[in-house]
Image (cartoon, rainbow, N blue to C red):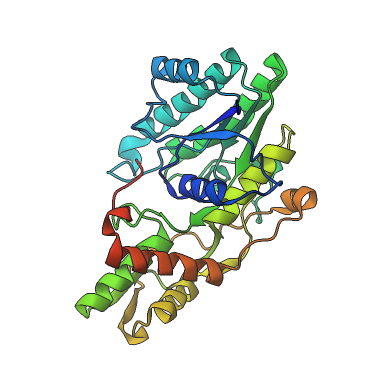
Length: 326
């Protein structure tokens, strides 16, 4: 009988990439002889310790990859809901850690966030600086919950001898992304806006002047990086694992326009609106030293994502997620 590996958060973009990759791959870089169990919030409420323990008891897992998070959408943004973001994310982490300890999980992967790095740090952000300075004020409840994963994994490793690793992704985009206009990240939101505007012959409005630089990693690359680390990496030191290719918001907007065939004269950059921080660069050199990982160029991943969205909006609209993962 195959050993079981639990993958939480499997309905979001990264979890979906995991499913696609593991269903089609027979790559020895991954642990491909496991029975992967993919769950979303409807399968088990990870905030509820009793449900988590019952789920672990029923399924007899050997490994856990914890991707699930509550990061926004459905109004869970701004200072009004910082307690909810902090409590639920920390509760999920602690419940997963405690269940993994008590049910003798052989290896656990925790997912952190680049948002936990202080905007006051010199860039690119390095793993050693995780606790230097204050996290960004915007979603600080979420960011500090993610920052707490680093001392938590060290504490459980030290006291119980558990094999726990922590990985830090940056912006993720790809097939099966969240295209909800009220909660979607930049790339999927723009893709949907462009198609809506093209069909209705309307202009596109983009906040700010388009100058901020952003790192985006194709979801299947991120899944491959996670799976490589899950098999090969065993240190307590967290790793930044995202691509460091940077593109400006304006360049991303024009790339999407070119791929879709949208009239650029209809793109309006509203300079009266906030443009966000100028850049959030990360240093992934520690990960590259141990893995020699190769990333898909942003433009190539973008084309694949747009092709997926366009095909499914015409043929399988029920497959397009138009609601927040929260």
